Length: 527
Image (cartoon, rainbow, N blue to C red; front, side, top):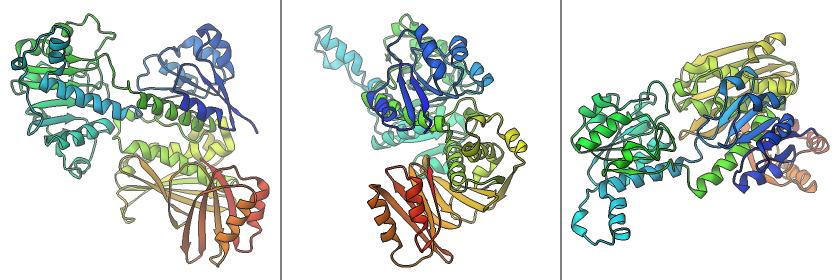
């Protein structure tokens, strides 16, 4: 069995390292403690590299990494990654943006409470100055205050929900989501940014791009209430720092809670001289729990990308993720996984790939087709296929690529379906996403199911007669293969079982299953 070489260039939590060590098709190389010059010799054999801020993925690094297919930045920021250089070499660059979600949410709430009650200053007066003057510290309550949340993604919507528990009046502005995403949670929604400027407290949770840099400046602050409180635990520069300083100094802004700055470390920043600001040194991800999750997600993403299954949170794809609604991103990943799955279940010549959609997701079909093509062709083309050359490889192989849009008749808000026509026939698979990021396969070859697209699985078509489940269990048990889950769907043409197992299925075991009297077809796939 060929192994994929994954090099860990910087320190990550041991739980992530354990995943790499215990994955049989991974050759894991730990290079976090070696000199960065020596690293250039090690990286030449890497299929995938995991880095943090200590390793610059620059021209020298990329020139040395001659076999590199993907790079995982274990964290949110990627300023130390030469994105253009990666794209020129066909290297997919990814980050891990959601593992620190809870840490960032809780830090936002901490700043909000600190601004309202001025805890850091009260703390210093007692602990540092040794002064006991309770009368100096009459703050304000969150209860009943109106909170404006700019950006309703992973972090923003969780901040809003926590604010609701404080019995705040919460409204959000995010032009890239359907209003029901907020209103279904009891959160107010507005498409008028002016409504946010009227709030008592404003917190921002957007990516940093041309649209959001200096989103709050002098003009916006002038329209705010006197005594407004501003929070920024997202990105430096979303609030204009000069305007923030001037209006904190004048008292127009009563307090500000800031975790991020345009230039860091910000040890000499003028904002630090003001008495009405709480500051932290970019601590959004600084919890033990988030560091553990970052390492786990980085390891899992590295394995998926090494196998060519998926490239979660890729930064240099043919679709600009910063300009699409957040609900689209999990469908992109799900599409590639589904295509990879059905291509494994029918390893014959692919003749056409059709991707169809219901709901708002259909607006992004052209881009999603690229991901389906990469997933389907990864089984046969391996490292040769990527997002840049997918359509060209398909053309060379005379594979027809098409999309179809349907009215919503399935009952799902959004649904993606893939139809793979091969030399053996037609394979179909459908999936959807629940609650923003819960991916599910809901149909395979017209059999309704509910499967997480992850893990080792046996896919078995069989005649619907008694005793099949027992016979399957006996064969797997006799071969020391543990069943993690057994999903069964019945229809007029028989039954379809998807059996999730803990161990890889050998050819011999597959033949034993195929020889069952009730078996129509049996295949093994891994996502």
